[in-house]
Length: 548
Image 1: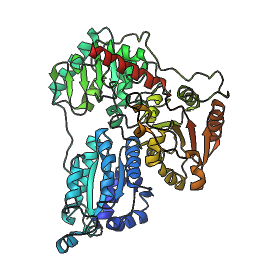
Image 2: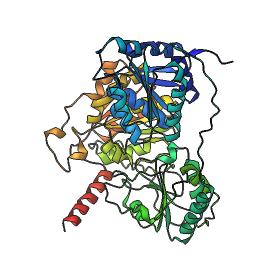
Image 3: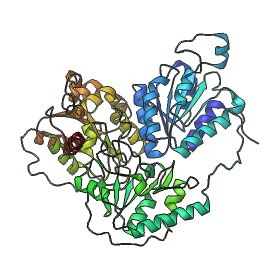
Image 4: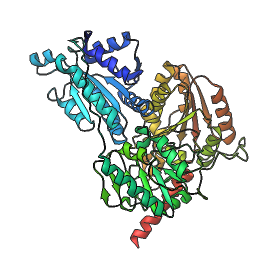
């Protein structure tokens, strides 16, 4: 006999069963009843952030590490502030459950206009239907369990966000959970799978220089070990896209580095491949160096969760995971690895304690020597991200960034979600001054919950990635005294860095500090990382070539 529960309790239990231990959000009147249930329930801890966007980014980062994230807000004024973070989670395949309280079903019959309402009561649900893979309004206790199960399963299967709207008068409505025996698992067509594996093996065996271009879906779908085993066992080098940096640890002998955003040697090696295996890869502009690279999916194997094509052959009935796992038994001949480009481990700095002004290149060189095995790098958009491509990351999945959707403001709240998801890692947060001003206030949330990321603010007085193209007053950021924020928050420590010596001292102090540390690094407004300079030079050459 099933035990009676209510809609809210069932939702909490289901989220916990799927790996949720923390839920991010902001309380509001339409969701207070559910908030009260969560707070009294020991299964999930509520993390109250400073703003809904910060909650959304934190849940996104949490999902990237733990496999599922959750954010809970009120209707209208709270829900719509999550539109941007949900769009990013959808674009970059991060499974986040968006829970929004809403007016009660009885209220909707009595009142035409309620506060936080936009047009009709279904407006917010229609908005989120545009960038979620499943959505529901829990408007009936009789269907609540089925709808909750359906929507959360979609998030887990497709690795994208989903939307659950919970009317406030349904939170405590009783339901009777029942067991579901329906088998929803999908399977590949066996003959099509074998044909795809045989064709792939034949192309690799005939190739002079096969290369794997590893994408972020390998991490999202838990297929990293399969690709590592393939590369190691068959001697096939692996490069990663910018979004997928750390999908393979930099320490692996077969790992080339980041394809675009990395060194010219890596880019040339990948482009020279006569059999490119693009596995879980987004062919986006940032991953392809703003289309300065020569990658043609029709010349190789392109496998994602949405399609499998081998040259001009399409295998619509073969699942991504089945194909990746099947490569282990495919008749691919092992080959010697040979000389390949490799990520450069941290090199000692000639004068780390010198009094010369700090440069972007020197900053990232020092950070490279500072990174430890337990360091997780969380990079925001801009030169923080481009410069981070040259960092040597020791472990798989220890690098997070929004390198496809590219929303400024991800890194600080992302560090909050990341450290709660993996308390054994310490985030090193790289963020520009403009991005920090958008969501850096989440340091107060980080302080509240006793977390200790090291936040490095690249203060070059504006948006440096735009200056090579257009440099107007709109690119300038009004200066903050970033390093003094610990005085306002009553927690943490701050450093203002002008020289290499000051950076060296700040990093040494941060390593010993058990609270958060913010290091404001003053940089010349026209200084850029070596990685961004390489990309800018390639863009200039491509523009000149097109003009001629």
